[in-house]
Structures are given as C-alpha cells and as structure tokens.
Length: 209
Image (cartoon, rainbow, N blue to C red):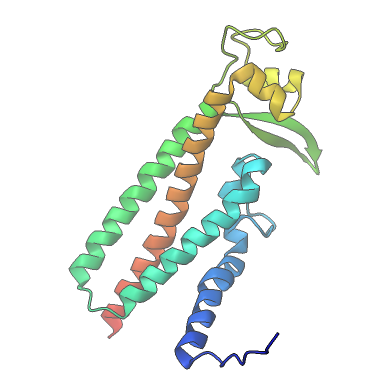
C-alpha cells in the first residue's frame, strides 16, 4: 500500500474545529451544574425531577441544544441587528419560557409518580417514574396486581420499579406519550432560558457600543 501524504488543514479548517469543540464541548462542561450533570450543594437542577432513565440522554441532548443557541446568539452578535428586533425576540423567548414552564408545572403531577426511595440525610428522597396518569387506569391485564383507581405512587410501590411492570399496569402508549410531552417541555424550557440570557447580553452589548 502506498503512503499518501495528507496536507495539514487550512487555518479556516483549524478555526472551524476549535469552534465546534468550543460550542459542542466547552458549553456543555461549563453548564454541567445547570444541566444537572454536576451536583452542586443546595442546588437542584430541573432534570432531577425526571426519571434517571430519561436523564441519561436528556442531559447530552439539552447540552447540544443550548450549544446551538449559543452559536445563533454569537452569530447575531456580529450582525447588524436592530434593538427593536432583539427586543421582540427577547419578549417572544420569555413568553415561550413562561408558558412551557407553567405547562410543565401543571401537567407534571399527572404524568409522573414520585415514589419514596428512603431517607438521605435528614430528608426523604424520591424516585420519579413516568406513568402518564395520576391513578391506575382500567381495565388491567391479569399480570398487573394493582386495582383501577389506586394512586400511581401506590401501584408503582407494589409492582416495583422495573419498566416492564410499570408498562403493564399503565400502558406503553400512555407512558410513551407522557415521556414525549415531558421531553419537549424540558427542552423548550432550557432552550428558551438560554436564548433569553443570550438576547439580554446582546442587547446590553449594543447599548454599550
């Protein structure tokens, strides 16, 4: 096999790689406490309200989304964007944040069961389990040992945390729909918050120029 010489990348290519690493890696590392990847005493990230099975992939997805928001804001910084346009985008972003956060707060108790895990220090710890409903639906398959109408927390405590058992009692379709709704709301909250912060900084920069 003949060795082929590979020319070093151009300065533009090097800059592109560094920018990708900066936006894709550095942003995620810097925001690790906010995203919930790094634990900080006396601070609980929004992701901690979600089941651990969702956290494993929601954290990197939200990090990539926020990284993209930073790219867009950085691009807008170098554009001739009017203060009025920035103000409109900021207001729209705040509206998205408030509406999605309130929606999440409203539907969360109906979609997620919080089961007692045990004492951690001086307070009770809970595990979040997506059930899609606050009570056991009916009719139930024979394999489910719960009773229709029972609280979801009680049923999950009886059948255990094994995903197959939870799906048997609450239905895979119902759980999948609830999971999608919770995921989209979480991503919308995170993206709109990051966007509002970025737009606020962009407006401040324009005023100082």
